[in-house]
Length: 150
Image (cartoon, rainbow, N blue to C red; front, top):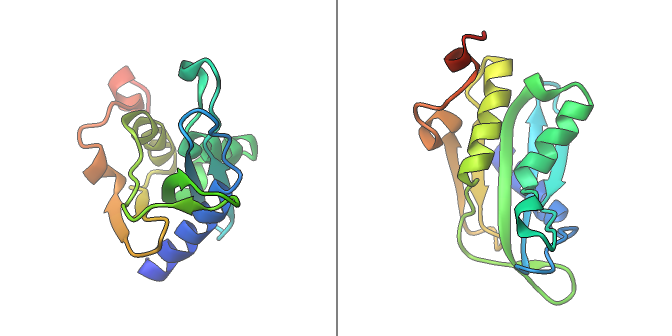
């Protein structure tokens, strides 16, 4: 998959980040999944006053794919984030990576689809685009096989 796909996903993630509900951290994150048929599913972080109930952009996108019955069709994800800027954009010059929880949830989709999901990590200013395989970001992941399933 060419890096042009990563740029498209990160651009969709950047657009999604504009809708972040992040009144506490003021750090907006957007994610965009690429499905096997080319469909793009966006997600954005959704904070809660009870911090532990907040949702990451990646898990929101994965939940949306699951609602559509498409969790096993995830091929790649683009992620971007940064400080919320006046006017609704985001600022940031560093690549954003999925947290450990999101890596584990992505692993569930990877196991279901039988593929190593490509993870594109981008910066809000567009200067950085890094391509990784999920297995590189989460080696020795815990999955269904560890429970005797699959």
